[in-house]
Amino acid sequence: MVRQLLAEHQGKLYIVYTPPYDPDANRIEWLWRVCRRIVTHNHQHTNLEELIDDSNAHFAELSANLAEVLAHIGSPFALDYDSTPQDLAA
Image (cartoon, rainbow, N blue to C red; front, side, top):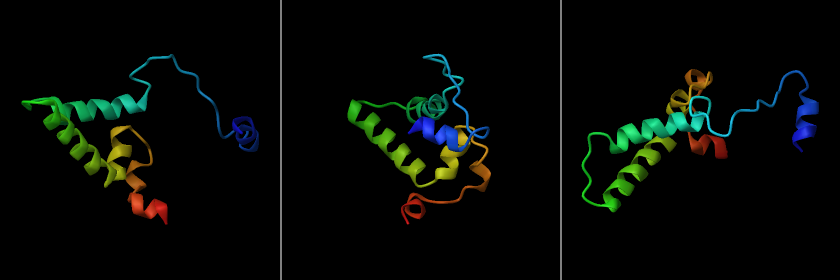
């Protein structure tokens, strides 16, 4: 399936191989940095449930604003993206 997709989009789509762990190249790491800063920095949690609740609230907020997620991962489409998850399901 991947080979077929690459053949169909030859010259437009490329596979880029990256090291197994390269946080600066792995965009999900960029999103985790934001989560860590917002959820754990300068906050005091007395138990794990509070930390989990804050984390869930943070990701619920992100899921309602996909443009913000794209901005956090450095996507060039972030400025043009104003769809919500409900728009994508339609």
